[in-house]
Image (tube, rainbow, N blue to C red; front, top):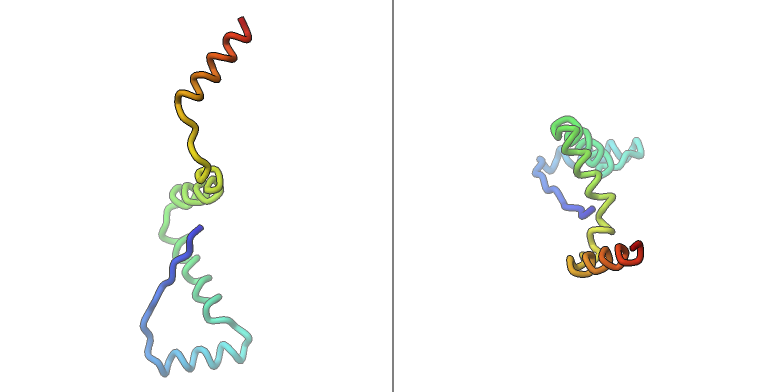
Length: 85
């Protein structure tokens, strides 16, 4: 799935402080923010929409394949019917 960046504003002194104290606890700011964003996604996006998005991610390689032409499908079907008769 394609990723996008999120930019937020925070007081510089507070940001330095949170980075400093997270570093002392071997915590990663980006990982923590990502986890928080995931929780927001799960909280606000309805389950049915999340399932739809997840299904779209699984099917993405197949969707990149060129679609078959309608005429080719009908010819294949006709050929099968003739073989059965």
